Length: 332
Ligand SMILES: NC(=O)c1ccc[n+]([C@@H]2O[C@H](COP(=O)([O-])OP(=O)(O)OC[C@H]3O[C@@H](n4cnc5c(N)ncnc54)[C@H](OP(=O)(O)O)[C@@H]3O)[C@@H](O)[C@H]2O)c1
Image (cartoon, protein in one colour):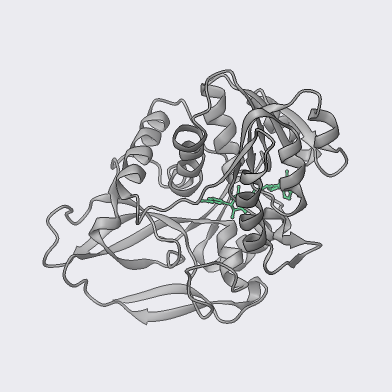
């Protein structure tokens, strides 16, 4: 049996990604072979392509942070899954592919009837938002929060989950996306033309979800109440004027940790999703989110879908910031 996967052949623009054919090997030991239905386009995929994502091999490498799929074959030592089970996994890389072999211990069984496109958005983006809300900031209902990049993948998840908690939300986004923010009761700020620090300094917030990095972190700190918390989790501003800025992510992480020791009564913390080390929390949180999806309490915004073969176009769309919500690749 043959597999097709996308390989980033060298550091650079989306065109460096190519479709590659390979033989599929039967899974051994406690591995399973998963037929991938959908994978998401994550900003991390772009950082991986520019050779800037810690812990992931440099190109040539296959990106793909998460997946929804069906078990195709099980290794001889697997007892927890059977062929045909629907599963989700946070792979970090490797899921831009039609098939993937993974240790069974990394998989979460999900209901058969669940939509593979909507549920794809839950695996990375909603778990990230959910953990930052419920495990890291422990933000209380009706508190005031600032969501940067509110129109994006994690931002839309934070808005929908925040609305369930009746939070008082402010969000930064381009003007063209303000109607989306208002739909979730979020007061929009156009970061391209307005200074959020000026607007919020006299009406500060309890928690900032900071995904922009660089100079934005210091400004975000200034709009935090005394006793407030800044959760730093991304360097979306690594793309500037169409070019990737190397090192901004690492510098921003160090800066966000350093600000925590300033004697200003404000706290900062760095959040990074980690399903390998915290598989139990990942399972619990994804299960809670699937329940919210089934109950119609959340409805992931899918900005666009592309066939796997068009992964380069999908990556270009994310680099340009053309999208809202999640971009999903259809693999099978
Ligand atoms: N730490 C973790 O575990 C974790 C997990 C998931 C994601 N992340 C990180 O979180 C960040 C966001 O991810 P995402 O998937 O939500 O990305 P995304 O879908 O691209 O959304 C981010 C949005 O931010 C907006 N934006 C871009 N530059 C901005 C700026 N200078 N100021 C304010 N807003 C700006 C854009 O919105 P407009 O189009 O409205 O301008 C963009 O759509 C990325 O850096 C990603 O790597 C981290």
